[in-house]
Length: 164
Image 1 (cartoon, helix red, strand yellow):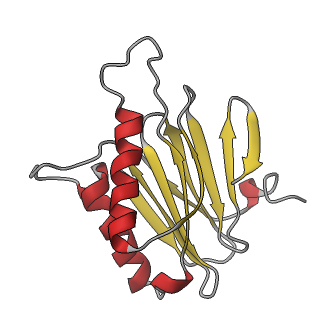
Image 2: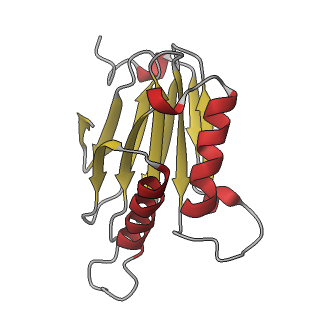
């Protein structure tokens, strides 16, 4: 049975919008849905089988109080800190990113998806983090599902799925 077909039989951590979640269950998955202009940052340590996801909505908090997972600049460091607390090591982490679509194709005014990804790239550059794979942009929402036994990230968009 392929990883994409057997997800229903695995323990699952569901990550909502403006949320993050991690697991070290090697039989589990970490999944997030509705990645439109939002970005899903998936991290995985293959040595200790720790994986997680941040599903953020906006690029920067700009001093706003509240949920740090809503923003790239506050959510990304929190995701990494929580992974380290579960035993992950920065040098082992594999980072994959999807989302960042422009859901309103008729409007070029806000470009939230593009801004979300630009800020993420800057954060990673400053922190010395390399993205192993990305699937960003376009005009369709995505779902990402990380398998903690293999580290495979399966992305679903428009009824099709593939490994990122």
